[in-house]
Image 1 (cartoon, rainbow, N blue to C red):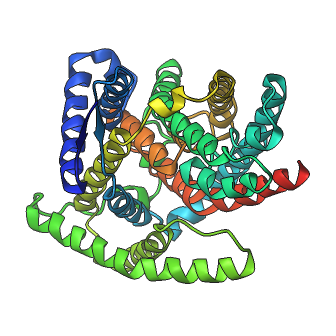
Image 2 (image 1 turned 135 degrees about the vertical axis):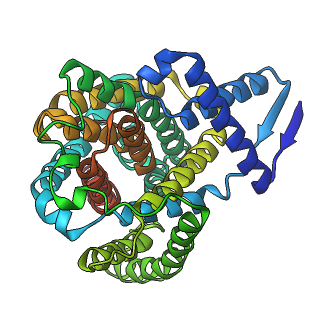
Length: 405
């Protein structure tokens, strides 16, 4: 079998090629655009499937180095931090509390369902638990972090089970978040122009006064500033993890938490000034580019053939978990969040991080807002809950279940 291996720089270029291919496919097949599937997911998933077929046929396999995915992930989440205005948070505190509540409820639903289905399929409880919130709400990072505790109980395949389940969850969440939200928007005739939509309420949600036309200089200034924020923010992440690790061993925040907090601080300083120091229009370019490259790198790096080596019961449980999570989002999250346009966008975000990762949540929401209009409130609520709260809560709940078992 031929092995074609790309280094980290080549992999980044190849990921961009799949992104361009994904855009072409979506333009070629309007149905995909109708369901708001991100181009990075479409192009990357097609490649991942093709790579799996070639490997199983013993013809060739592509080895992708996703080293730079972390960089673009941190850049993107730093730009999300620039949206965390205290002015907006005060107005959004009720929505954030509700969204956190339904997210925590989803953790318990996923874990209880995983244990019940695992028992029905004959999968030991600790391994079955990995198919719940560790893999879905938690994603690959949480699944990998929790697995050693499961292995210590005598289940040597825990890491493989958890990471593979999380990988499948990412794929399912990526392709379902947009369509579910898009269907809700069309069925209820919702719009970003509705009177109760966050894009039309409050000065914070309106763009700052128009500056001169977009230029490379404006984009460069915001990109340079973002990189400086990341430099400073990572020190904060390390400090937080030191103290959290000292108090509760084995728990740590993701790398981008510090940069997000520093970016949020800069945002509020900017809001307090007569002349803002942040250029929101230019930041959009940095945000879009970093998210698309990060997602593309993640997708082309998927090794789907590893899923085929797992038992069918595991795949069945993940599929059923996905169906329940989608139904939970569509009929509970959407209604509790207000049954309006912002609620529909938050539904897409919930499915994104409820079955894989916060980056999927942002991608699903961005795809919806690109097509139907902005929803600052949805991005604020999902980023606060998905990045700052849910991983912390999820870890404690998971270890509570492990101790119970």
